[in-house]
Amino acid sequence: MLSPIELFKFGAPFDELVAASKLWREKMKATLIRYDQDQGGTFGVLILDGRPFCSTLEPMDKGNVANVSCIPGDTTYICGIVDSPKYGPTFEVQGVPGRSHILIHSGNLVEHTKGCILLGKYEGKLKGNRAVLNSGETFRHFLSMCVGLTEFPLEIVEAARLKEVA
Image 1 (cartoon, rainbow, N blue to C red):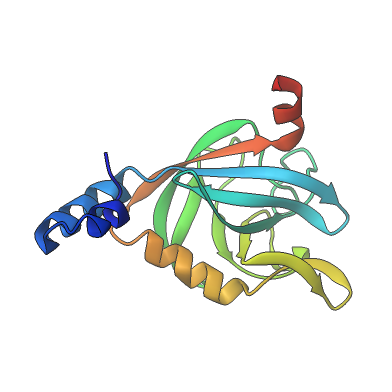
Image 2 (image 1 turned 90 degrees about the vertical axis):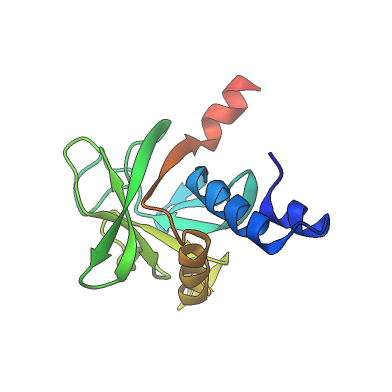
């Protein structure tokens, strides 16, 4: 199936673009590849429909302890739409054993997350600490990519595992 962008390039009529866009969004697949972890947090890259979208930041792995740890990797979760009192419309990572209220939201530093996934355009430094930057705009862009979705699968992959397979 061609993406809406590819259909646009071929000159598809507007109604076909709208239909293709809706179908394309319903099938969105997200993969978070975690590539580094230190006191600054767990850093990764979010892939949407096979293309790198943004950088991510989560807390360090502390055994899936609520509010202080990233969630277990090498698993696929379902992210469902929620209306957070603090962040507004966003997506919640569901089905994490012993955990709830794990949101995808904006934030720059590991102290801005209590087990959630922060989105930023790229990794950098803020106040001398590792961070994801341009988070507000990146989060808004993420939400615009999800218009019409009520849920999507999120696969979390540890980069170390990718090296073992290769």
